[in-house]
Image (cartoon, rainbow, N blue to C red; front, side, top):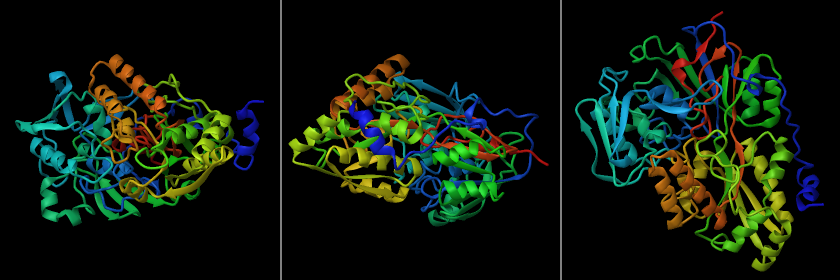
Amino acid sequence: MSNRNRLLPLLFAPLLVVAGCSGGAGAGGPEVTTGPPQRGGQLTVLEDASFSGSWPTGLDPATNTTGGANLPQMSAIYGGLFAITANDDGSGAKVEPNQAERYELADGGATVRITLREGIKFSDGTPLDAEAVVFNIRRNLDSPCTCRPVWPPLAQGGIATEGARTVVLRFTRPYAAVINAFPVANVNWIASPTALQKLGPDQFRIQPVGAGPFTVVSNKLNSELVLERNPTYFKDGLPYLDRLTFKSIGGDQPAYQALLAGQAQAYEGLTTTPLLNQAKANSALTVTPQPPTSPYVVQLNTKIAPFNDEKAREAIYAATDFEAVAKGLFAGQYPVSQMFTGPGGLFHHEKVNGYPAFDLERAKQLVRELGGLTVKLGTLSTYVAEQVNTALQTQWRAAGIDVEIETYQLSTLVQQFNGGTWQAMLQTAGAWDPAAGVGVGFRFLSTSPFSGVVDPELDKLLNDAAGTIDAAQREQLYVKAGERIADRAYAPFGLAFAPANLAVKGVHGPGLTTKIPPVIVNSSILWDKVWREQR
């Protein structure tokens, strides 16, 4: 009997979840609606307090520290220069101009010109013009947020205007992924400079002013954000909703119960597998699992002990069996990837040449040669992440590795990375475009504070891939980067997981009840097109 088969009963007897695929809108094709969208009504959306339901520093794009998680709130208030769209089944995903009208790449991808739509105004009546965008980009590049763009260095005078409607960005090297990177970065959210100056930073973070589909009525940090329709929104007839409210809630179980009790009408980011199956079987709900773009990865901090020793990293690879985790915990619902993209993202490859295989006996031998191995393994406080970490702890202990588990809220997790003393972290690695947002560079570039790797050769592969316009060449470079990560045993990859969105029947909208590949973890819901059937 193989090591894998011999370990399965031991590893998962206390954790096994029956994860069937019964019914529900998300289990089959895209949602089917009848009739045109209807205008009016209110919607309350629940957000998990450990992720998107946490906005402790407010909603100013330049001072928010959790903006990657706060895409729902930010896009509702600010809209965005660009947006990711897709067919209802998630296919054909692409980034399209939104407040921007068009763009062009020049100088081999080192220069981008963005032309804005004419006549867009912030909700305070001031113009969203090129000067406002340049002001915001300069300010947002200095942000402490994880959503600050991971751009190549800008050339001298690299942010400029050409007339009233055109913004020019000039980089020191080609960056062909620049447009795909906008929807996941704070530079996509343009705030009113006039309102910022009038209110001051402290008040503006509570009462921000943008040009998105909704304006702020009230904002209780980490608790409740109440929005109402922006009467000056630039898209005729939109948004459909009169009012949109985001409420923070303490996880999947209370969110599910709140939906059933009629206290809310939607929930973003369900990850608890038993609840997902219950929801699929509930005729009162529409369940939409999103296309997985970001596999889990066990990041290893190669800058400090024990993982500055390649042998210790090899022991982790040899002791890790993500296939068993996927089968034992989730009944094979989530595919395993050996690379930093999932099936819903660009340039996905399920297998990587030279990827170190699970080998329990080799793991035991490596641990003996090391004289023992003790690891602190952290992750975000979510159901799937905690389940996976518990399974990894069991696997690693079988190889003789002593493992301590820690779970964190998002703000605390960021502090752990910034402190630099973390050892191992189970995180998501990747994005719809690997060069955007919390993509491969975010986790593996030497210059990223959220990376445990310093490798100039890997840096060059990733930077060249991000700067290459030709898609086939980009893919080849990313394949080589995946092989480099495997060869140096930097971080084993795992489940290509994406959460599901829940909505009560009668609620419809792109990314909420249809599929849009997640740009970070959750999908970018197009809030201006979300609507409710009026009874």
